[in-house]
Length: 319
Ligand code: 8YV
Image (tube, rainbow, N blue to C red):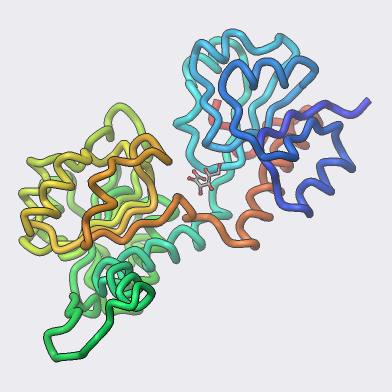
């Protein structure tokens, strides 16, 4: 008997093919967003769940999951959508998909930096909306990335790849992380043991920390004030690490030159003020959205299921 896996979202074809070969999948062909009640209903006959970050496994949902569900094999590196303490209490195994999305997310981060610095949204809108009438040396002037200082908060897998890509722009890399990384990983990046120590060195600031109670609203008004005037902030981690009101105020006042955001509080119902600001480059949480990466994420989630149902500890076990 193949294990039954509830798959909450539409996965890449190659991933679904392997899933069909090795498991009994319960699919969601309409790709509807499941709330807690729907997850519980759909999981009635499941041994495992393969969800995305869009499904919220709160303590209340986890407590009500059918007894036969033993593992949540996430299709995501972030697992802040799962109450890990509740999962542990219930004896649920939880896995994620690290490493395979670092390149794609780092590429998107560079896009956010360039998009914000070179006013890409504004320029695109102008051309599309037939607002482009003339040209002058002062027209659509942005900020140069080459040779500037990039500060990275969260120097894990994604942060490290961002640093490597940014070096191609001759950027000077600074970082803050819970722990200083080894010199061969640092590759000359300058460590700061607090965000406060890092921020004055950031012409560009990229957020790559995990979402946790410790990082909630990490970028608040007090810390934004420590950034150099005219700095650019980009976020491809999680919306909760930013205090929206503070960021919006700094973008309006000119304290910050611009921001590039791929993640938001309360996605997709984002703070409406962002839509009205010309100096934000907005993306709809697509950091890992390349064909190669989405396939790799799916295979990685399946590797974790294979290990679990093969009686081994999954490589990416986080609970
Ligand atoms: C994923 C992400 O696309 O992996 C993550 O944590 O934020 C995204 O890259 C998404 O989570 C899929 O579930």
